Length: 176
Image 1 (cartoon, rainbow, N blue to C red):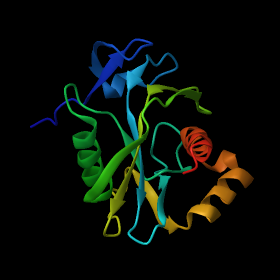
Image 2 (tube, helix red, strand yellow; image 1 turned 135 degrees about the horizontal axis):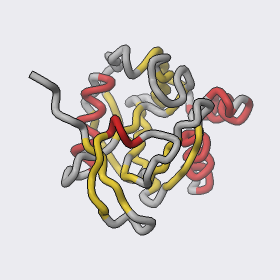
Image 3 (cartoon, rainbow, N blue to C red; image 1 turned 90 degrees about the horizontal axis):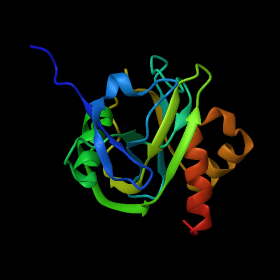
Image 4 (spheres, one colour; image 1 turned 120 degrees about the vertical axis):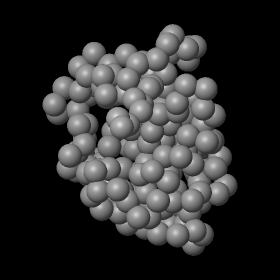
C-alpha cells in the first residue's frame, strides 16, 4: 500500500488559502508561498534542543537548526501538526506548545537553488524525554544552553539554517 501523499497549503501574501499541492512537488527553484511552522523545543531544565539536518535532506542538508519544522495538513490546527511532527521526526511527546512569533515569514535559497518560501509561525514547546530521531530527518541532536547556542549562531551563522538565524534575531528582539 502506498503512503498517503503529504499536502501543503498554498497561500497568498495575506495567508489566505489558495489550494494545496503535494509537498514533494512544492520545494523547487520556484517554490510557491505556503504554510509551515517551526518549533523550538526546551527540556525541563531550560536547555534547547538543537538538531542537525540529515545529509539526505533536499534543502540545507547537514546544517544545524531548531528542533523541527513542518507543514500543517489542510484543516489541521497548528498545535496538532506540531504534536504530529514532533512524534514523527523526533519521537517526542510535547507539552506547553505556545506561539511565540505568529507572523514569522521568510524566503531563502539554498546552495542547490531550492527555495523555501513560507508563512511559518514559530512555536515553543517542552519535551520531557530525549529525542529518538528518524535518521532520514535528523543526523545529530544536542541539548544546548540557550546563551551558548545564541553565541554559536552569531559566530557562525552559515552553519545553521537561515530560518533559525532569522528566528533567533526576532526572538531576541522580544526578549526571549
